[in-house]
Image (tube, rainbow, N blue to C red; front, side):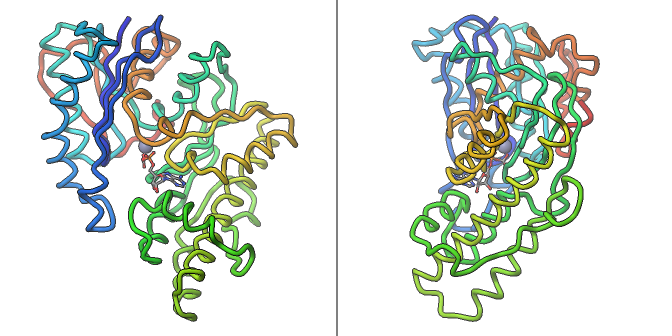
Amino acid sequence: MRVLGIETSCDDTAAAIYDGEAGLLVHRLASQVELHRQYGGVVPELAARDHIKTLLPLLDHLINDPRNGGVKPHAVAYTAGPGLAGALLVGAAVGKSLAQAWGVPAVGVHHMEGHLVAPMLEAAAHKTPLVCPLLALLVSGGHTMLVDVENLGAYRILGQSLDDAAGEAFDKTAKLLGLGYPGGPAIAQAAQRGQPRRFVLPRPMTNRAGFEFSFSGLKTQLRNLASRQPLDQQTIADLALACEVAVVETLRIKCKRALRHTGRNRLVVAGGVGANQRLRQRLRQLGDDMGVQVFYPRAQLCTDNGAMIAYAGYLRLFGELSNAADAPRAPTAKPTQSGAFEIRPRWSLADL
Ligand code: KG4
Ligand code: ZN
């Protein structure tokens, strides 16, 4: 079974084709970074318009790529939420329309479930299947959450961010320091030149019980520090390092707590911030200390991509998730004649 996956929830137009036997056949991505850079963040209306321009030519290339050979997919998966409403509508409209024209099923995928299964897609390709139960740390620009995964489709959110997501904290800090957009990679790069411990920022909420996060205070602390000294290149690098260390250590402390609490011996890390090398290294160390296996997708599949949506759609329609008690509610798993494009810009993983 071959599934076409379409991702347009934010500022990447991405698509991929996953084959149940051959694995990931082909994936393509068109980033809108240049479009949004001048605004220092994603402008929703511009994002939606750019998806409209980019998606069909991108799909054309994908379907006709020699690795797919023009073959019509057996199903279409698209991101139905959460995300920017206008941006989601483009992927949903195109995905459902194609499915209807081809006479194949369409399935709306939860973006965070996509992130969650990305490491499994990698593991499957390496013939070392990643099985449940496990603990998942999902860290992106819109979400930061710890999820206890008893089985695929059975998610218990242990805790999430009460305000800014980890990636959002990086993006806002980078803007403040004039490091540009997207902030995560810019902070990581600047931090390499930083002097350890010149500035130390608190690890928010680690002295309280529970698994909640709060990253919005970091930006204020950083602004205060930045206003007290000249922002030369070294100071910017030192502040970037302090920010990166604070976020990474906070995530590590909460992961350790959640691993102890759940007794899980597998940790999956996914979402854009999962591409961060310091985070990977610190969590790998934690895994070694606790006898826990730690899994990441390659950096390309940490950030938004079509492969994770194709794979999650495959699992929902034909794989392990096809019997999940509650299939995603919003979009239908059958070809629809109604032509309604249902999306859920706000959609909790727990609803699955
Ligand atoms: O998963 P993603 O591509 O999109 C969302 O679903 O939000 O994540 C994007 C976020 C951005 O906040 C970006 O700054 C952050 O991931 N990010 C990183 C790195 N690469 C991307 N953060 C830290 N280190 C990185 N290397
Ligand atoms: Zn994402």
